[in-house]
Image (cartoon, rainbow, N blue to C red; front, side, top):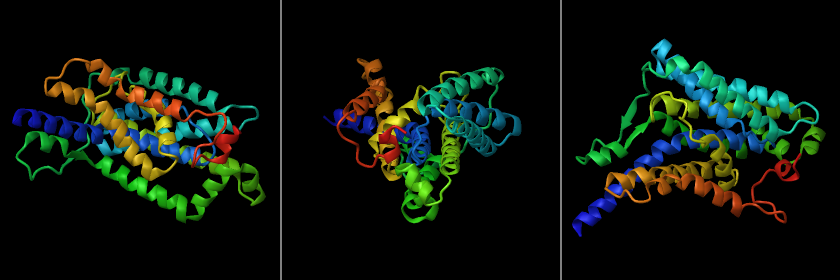
Length: 308
């Protein structure tokens, strides 16, 4: 019985550590998408932004010798793709969804093309904070080895919640997201607010991409993302457009992704690929559960529900 409990504890610890590591990119991309959607715009191109951020961060880290400079460069790449998305969406008779899909393909393809020389070189990685030094258990120490970006993301979730609730610019973003006509009547520049929101959202997605290449798994390859940028859209819906809820939903998605490797670490090999599909199954279940032609989800910005 003690061996069984030890195995269960090992799985839980591994899932906890995996939830933090795998959930960090989800956290940054979902916060970026939350900000963008609260302004009344959907950006499906964040998958391309995530991959482009991973490539840019890895390349700048390799060339400069500074991983943190790579993080900033990845955010800058996200800003540029966000600006391009916002610029295209401001044109007449242009659909946000179509632009997002096009930029997802563009960003991913450009990252693959420019990142070919970066597959072999080794770049400096982001340092980890060892919060499990108090324990003699190697599994606990590994699970509590947390990157600083996770802590920054947690603080950003709180800051973004406060921004929406208590600041004037947060009110502007919410007003534009609820009703563009009402925002114009108040004298707000709808296009400007949405452009800044989309660029800021792109910055966060780019930073999330840098975590993939500079910490976990910590290298650049063309199969790095596994669709996390697209899953972030479902995550934001699940979180009801609340940044605090995005934090916990990111941990949930990260834990689902870590379940397969955690079970394999204790010798459970059957259904390995099925458990690895858990994040994608969760995404499908969320999309099915939230699909309705007769009701509007709580917290959804009015411009999204109106389809404008």
